[in-house]
Image 1 (cartoon, rainbow, N blue to C red):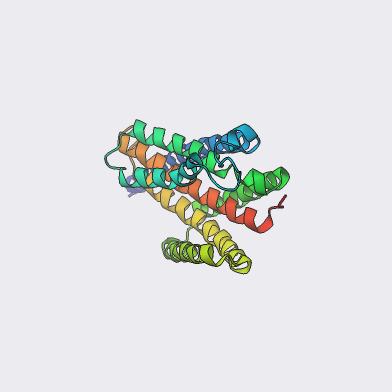
Image 2 (image 1 turned 90 degrees about the horizontal axis):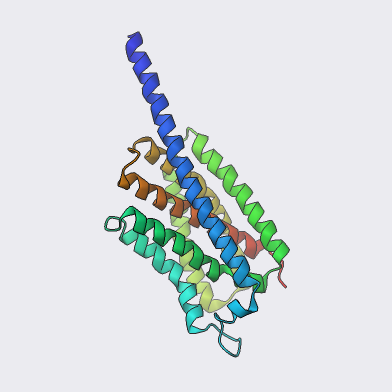
Length: 240
């Protein structure tokens, strides 16, 4: 009986170690992607020469390259999600890092709308909220599966409402969408971290499938953070 208890404790410790190792890899690649995005966004946003490549000659709309940069991130996410089983780990990692760079160029426009100080302040606020909810998701014993389903329903609602408001151009509706967006992506952060922790507890390290799961997990958390940051910026960012 004592031997069985020892084996159980040992197995539990091994599972915990695997989760920690997996999550450390996920957060490392997420952080690397955020660094790439931040650097590219900053240099594009503060260089009129680079920004001019994304707008037309009159400066009243996007250039062809600008439209490509705006919609390319969505294409990368779809490609990585739909091609997950076909792509090798190096290709998936390459797409993820290139995606982070393209996203940086896409986000560079926020430097034309908001003050640099408010952008950095909001980024730090988003990092704090994300970190807090990541800890909650990792440490809580409560199963967040049902909660995650509710958050996903909220996400679909935000998408539909955003499409409608694209035509209506209502500031009030935009404010409400941003408030709900902050709540949804704050909740999704906790849910996604718990989900990834459970995935990490059952993987085998050193094989390609696990490496690919790490990249997709990093992409998931990266998207949570970016969307949380953007919704916070729309609510509290100081416009020029």
